[in-house]
Image (cartoon, rainbow, N blue to C red; front, top):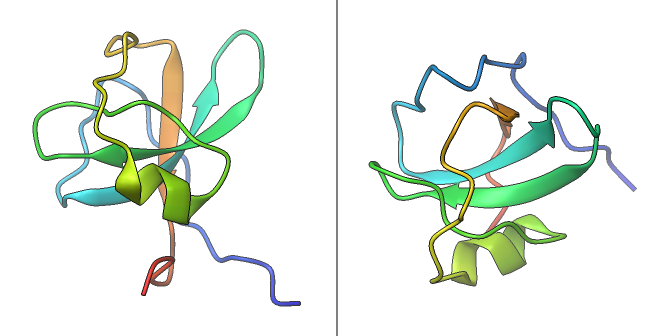
Length: 77
């Protein structure tokens, strides 16, 4: 099984340039989720990139508790 490729981590105050699924990491608790960035705000997190791409609920955490990084290759076909 191939390991996914990721970009470096970005500070939570920097917003993604592109719409799509990203991996997010909580700054204090260290857990990871995949979440969809709609170009303006984060949608609710999920365990897989495919599930995150289907999410429609807004995340309650739009603030700086999460770092994020992009997937280095397409994750959802």
